[in-house]
Length: 214
Image (cartoon, rainbow, N blue to C red; front, side):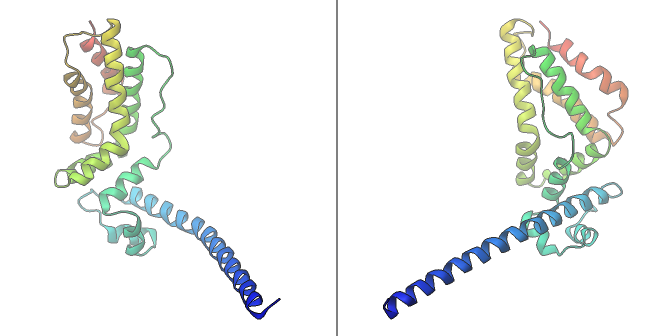
């Protein structure tokens, strides 16, 4: 083996060792990053139990989570984005729907699911994010894409199916129908933490379907 070949082999061995070291370092870093992320989201939820979105700050989240502000800004652009992910990063927030159910049953299930997800503390968080979104299209888009899009899409699709099958009034415009379903719910969200009470939760899905019926 020539000196040049030996040098080439040594360089290859060095490069492989460097790659393996980088991969091991990357793998070792992931759990710590995920742990920090979870701490930040949990800290945000805890803070929002006793303060409003207006009072919440990145500084307060960092202090509560015991991380640097730069760590938070590495993953989120602002406090509303942190709060939105803190809201979504909870059990029971997945939009799971029954399969092959009639349109009315699908809409009822979707409305009941939304009511469960927006009651109490969750409603307070969403109300705060809605307030923040009035001065930021980015926050409004974030809330729509990450939470509302699938749910509103389900309502549109099932209402169209119901009109085709004769279950729903064909004279009702689809956009108006969605407003009729979502409007009262979000009015309650914005009216206070306990505005979605047991009576509303029990009656609203059924009453909404009666208003849409053919």
